[in-house]
Length: 288
Length: 255
Ligand SMILES: Nc1ncnc2c1ncn2[C@@H]1O[C@H](COP(=O)(O)OP(=O)(O)OP(=O)(O)O)[C@@H](O)[C@H]1O
Ligand SMILES: Nc1ncnc2c1ncn2[C@@H]1O[C@H](COP(=O)(O)OP(=O)(O)OP(=O)(O)O)[C@@H](O)[C@H]1O
Ligand SMILES: [Mg+2]
Ligand SMILES: [Mg+2]
Image (cartoon, rainbow over all chains, first blue to last red; front, side, top):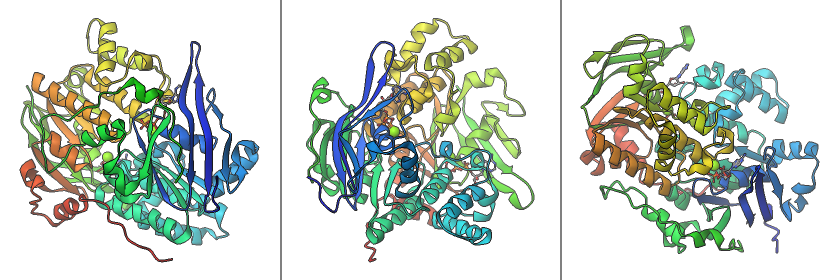
């Protein structure tokens, strides 16, 4: 059942990588919906979070194979679009901040030129208007010296500066959906708060849908509305974000227990004993 | 057994109006077998300090020492047997056309470690990647899997000092716990010395006895971990950082 508030509906999504000897299934038949909300995705390293994000945008590289009953954006099935139509969706309707942000920037073009170019593709603006706008965007993501950064190349940026620049760029086309893959993993908490509130504002004021992939459980719990928990290519649990700490699946419980805590020092951290049954259990249906 | 130190270290990039003093008169010392944390603002110079220690910053002044040796010019291969670094950006630090096996074998060979095959298997196992990942290329790995390959490579020469730049930032907390436990064990077995950069204060608090807080190129405060736990900061910025670490507070935007 799709609701009219749904922006995106993913039905039975698979991502497979054939190799000489076997086929590796990175995403194994997941279904979920996204409304005008902050949807968190957490889960083990290698569980298929990034591949899910890329598959929605049909950015899985060969020899990877994507299948789905449907990936519908306002009722339009993205699986049926031509590559050319898909480019339009990518530029305008859905943006994605990749996990390795510096790799999505052009290494031989200055940061400023890249922002200006992206902005002028989206809005009619003179070069000097676009320049002013670019500086404004860099300031909005707490870049200390926007003028220098404007003239700099991606390799001259710190890890967290790269992430912030990428977020600023992805928000230029005013997307309906932003898929953010570990977008703040290199930011100190204070700059992180700044950047998150920009995304938050777009969800609340303009009704953007946000898919927020992160391993930071406390952050997801405080920032998101709902959470999907992935394990071995499947969704093993979904819950309200503010109830994440009451999660029931043993994998999710295990995750919560392995967090280091500043107030309670320990010699060693608890590690997870992975049960093979977790891998076999069917994906839960996201019906909220 | 080796410690390290920096005295009045400055590191800068660019010139004219684009000159940045990325590290501004920084001094600290880490005793042999200790674990030292670097936290602070994004862009404040944390990675640059580690890069300067490993000889990757072209313009610097001041003094850096490892053990009793003053660091100057090009680092020798003996230096890299002693000091290894895990870079913040694992993608950029892994050769795109080398398999995991090639990367690890080459490092082992270069540093004269024998029984390469057994060692590669052990390293992969230590970082929670089975043999299935051995013949993959970096682009065939997830973000966290790449980060673990970078950690395995740094451990390969069995260094005495490890410089760790956000070593678990791409790992889910269960794998993070395994890696942090591994680092704790290695340190107690071989009295390794660590310098660890992380924006996650709980991780730094778990791993380090002493923590330097950076803002805009400067170390504003060096605090024992007990003070961080009890939120006793002297400097305004540290107080602000500790306060923000208590969690994201939702605001309502009315549009
Ligand atoms: N080209 C490829 N060939 C084979 N397997 C691949 C390829 N690309 C990715 N994979 C595998 O697909 C699985 C899912 O990868 P994905 O990047 O989605 O993980 P993730 O959940 O984002 O993990 P992380 O938190 O570590 O970033 C991983 O086990 C990865 O090794
Ligand atoms: N190769 C370079 N050329 C020019 N400037 C550089 C270069 N490398 C770093 N910088 C500048 O030095 C400053 C410090 O960067 P550094 O990477 O050390 O920050 P950081 O504290 O590690 O930040 P983050 O937490 O975001 O990774 C930044 O302003 C950055 O732009
Ligand atoms: Mg990922
Ligand atoms: Mg850094």
